[in-house]
Image 1 (cartoon, rainbow, N blue to C red):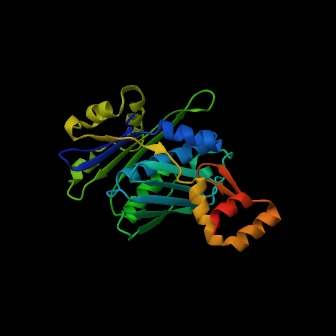
Image 2: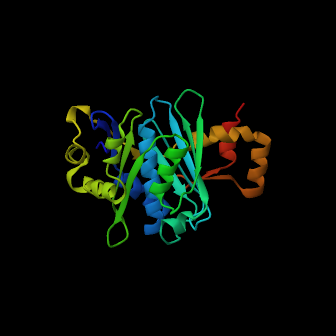
Image 3: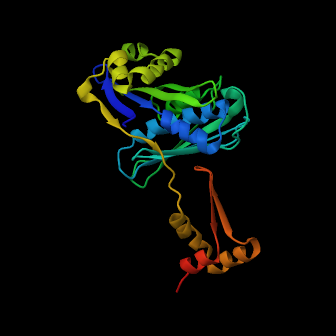
Length: 280
């Protein structure tokens, strides 16, 4: 099922992205054991990564960003690519509080974007006040990309604290957009209210009803929570240790152990694996 769309609205002056990220955020909650507070923060950032990934032009394009603050959640890292494989993690999964408590009141967002031309762009911004996920994202685009961009992010829960719906709307005026059009765009709570309509009527209908989008201009795709780690990939990485060092670790610890934070998966490599990796 396609769960993200992009189109132009307001006489092609505004880029609109809408996504139903429920499946994405539910998967993150399950594999990381997130509660309401941490699922809300990481879920919104995963949704933002979906938007940034969809904006990449080349097939090899990648995006990653790190949130470093003095909040209870610790470090948060999220990444995605042009095929819309998105992943992420938060360091402390069980802490509680509002978004500012999880993120902190002092910190930064650093974004690395590789459009596929081997010349990555690095941008950053400090946390604005008050601290919210949407506020940080909007500050980043204002400071580092010099693009006024408006985010509406939603993560809702059922009575058992499981994610019941997650979604995002992003409005990004193009350089020639007039001030009157920009001023008329829904922002903040109004944009979040529109996002929640996705759960009942779907992406395309929200684009048409709320933004007067033209059906023939809508481009829809599918995004998933996908980690790029695997045993073969990690074996390639571990060969850089060299056989002598890898054998020494195995002798001391019984195995070389690797933990992937993004998918919360543990890998173990023993002498048999080393035999395969370093076979003559």
